[in-house]
Length: 266
Image (tube, rainbow, N blue to C red; front, side, top):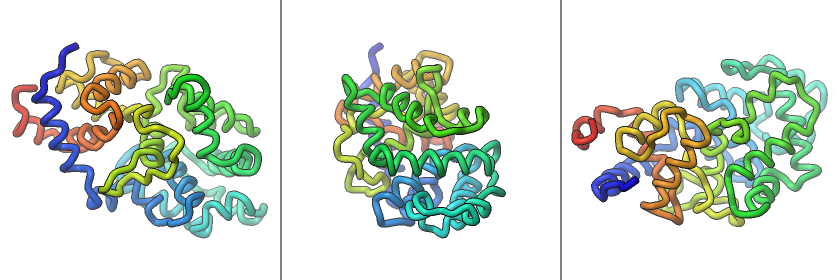
């Protein structure tokens, strides 16, 4: 598929428009920005990304509430929570993610940090197992994470690209942890994973925008579409394709910009 240079120019402009420090405050990425310690950033970011569906105001509010239940010290809580501490979090609910799911996530994260070297180590191992591939890395992470005893219902909260999931929230989380630039929205904490290997987060809104721009032909928002979209974005920037998530996400939320500034793509 041939993509017009006009599309690149438009996307690049919108990427710069949305990838700014002002983006942080109203987005779930604001949650890990509350912390300075590496493990606190990783864990709070992972939990915020996990519940990142629905209205952003609600996501941010509930993520802050979740962290308050963890005494705003997520790494310490993960490692040292006692039964009385765990009882405090059992009442947490965000949409279909409930207290039982949260208790499992706490135990799974404890296992990852005590037995597997932490979130960075697990994802890095997945990326370096063969060619650098987000597909392999997310599936590897899921296998490790689900190695902790859990209710079957909780599995739906860990995306499975092997089953076709677009893994939007985990791809978003990987963007936060891996890519880096001068704007400082993303953290760039994980140095052993290349931003070039990441895949673009895909949901209904970004998918609609991508199709209007001719970046995505496939109709389903599944893993094959993630690969198609990311492959086209790599034509614009092979070293940092997921920076365009800022443009696709922002335009998806402000469709009037598409009509006003890029009317040749109805």
